[in-house]
Every structure is written in C-alpha cells, then in structure tokens.
Length: 318
Image (cartoon, rainbow, N blue to C red; front, side):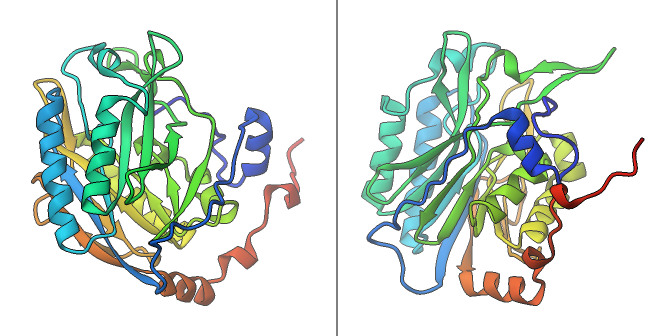
C-alpha cells in the first residue's frame, strides 16, 4: 500500500521493467497430468476471519477444503494471511517458516488428501533476515506439491502527518518476480492484496504471461474495502479480460484489526458471478470458469490488437 515500485503511468510497463531490473520469469511448466481437457472447471473463493491461533485457522481451512472438494471444486482460493494474523507487532515474524516447514506441509497434505488445488496467499514465509518475512502467495496442486510461489511486490508504506504511520517494508521483504502458472482451470496470475492498486502488474500478467485467471488474495481494511474493493477488482477483470478470483479476510481479527470481507469471483466482462450472501461470514462461494468465454470476450473486444505501447508515444513536453 504506498511504496510505489511502478510508475503511476499504467502504460509505462517497458520503462518500469528496465528501471527496476525486475528478474521476471515465465513459469511455462506443463499442465498437470490431471488437467481437465474441456474448458469448464469449478472454482471456489474462501472468506474467513483468521486470528493468531494457528491451529484454529488450520481447522477452519481444513473444513472448507473438504467441503469444497465434495462439491467438485478444482481450485479453492484462500485470502491473504489465511494461516495467521498477529495481534501485536512482531508476532508474524516470530511464527514465520520456510515453505518446506511444518505449517505449509500440513496444507500440502490437505491438498493431496482432498485431491484439490489450493491458492494460499499470503503466507508468512521466513525472510532473508530475522527482521523480515516474505508475504508469499503459494500455489499447491492436487498432489500436495508447491507448483509456484509469488512474493508480494507492492508494499504499503504510508506516513500521513498527524494521522497514520504504517511501514510494511519495515518487516516485509519486497518481492521482485512476476509469476504465472498453468493449472487445470487455466493459466493463473498470482498477486497479493495491495498489488490490486497497480494495474500495470495485471497488464503484464495478461499480455506478457498469458494469464487467464487472476488471483487476488487480500485483507482489505473496512474503510478501503467499502470505497474501492469491488471497483478495483472489476476494473482489473475488464482491463485484462480475465477471470478474477478475490478471496478476502472478513471481520474483526483482534481489538486493533478489522477486514472488509466480500470474497468474489468476476468474469472477463467484469460481471460478479459469485459471492457469499454475507460479506463477513466464513465460508466459500463457487463458480464455473469457462475458458471459452475469455476467447469470446477477447474476440468481440480485441484490445490486444489495439494497444499502443509507451515506446510509440510522442511527448510534447519541453
């Protein structure tokens, strides 16, 4: 949330890539052997209220995974900080683990036992030093293997005189890699929460990494959620002509922290096609991902053919 790593000009993707020297990688791995051959697949988006009780959070996730698998869901998406939300400063760093640690291994077992893909983001991954963690979006396949991971690029640093001071970069290590991964429901673009406010990242996922489904695990505050949550998500879907799956933290986690909630799934036309009946309840909503609809939308509105890159623009500035 305000450490702007990209320029405000959403068209300046090429210049930004050069300026920041991001080590971008393509994850063109082959689709898993269980990939569906048709263009329809059922996905689920979770809404929950995580706390600083690791075991209670795991039991909630376990129950939801089993229920979703019973409904035939192929990919279940959890919100940011699904496994833990601290109640005091430094608590998240204290419980941070490597991706091969015991906490993530329990979720790998869940995926394997339920035969389901899981989007888990962001996880408190052990960082490069004792003072920092990584806010990491982890993608598990139905064999319980980590297919890919994305470390949050945009960190929220803000200092409003006389009001709010918050510096995510003081305890979170900044990611530097854009990640997309093939899956049974299409090519997934991985992001986390505050990334949502930077459309150039989603443009890159669509046009450079061929993403079809954008994942946005989040924990928006009540204030920012009421003002911007659905608007931003629908905008990203419309701009990229991708499905957007946005899992959200909801309600009061402790005395100091409250999240907006409202987990939703949006189609490539920008229409909300699934959400829970109550934006604060714990549960999941289900929708069908139809890859042929992406093709239809992109054919009728061929924006990829009409894009004018920043390198082609002329400036009248003196």
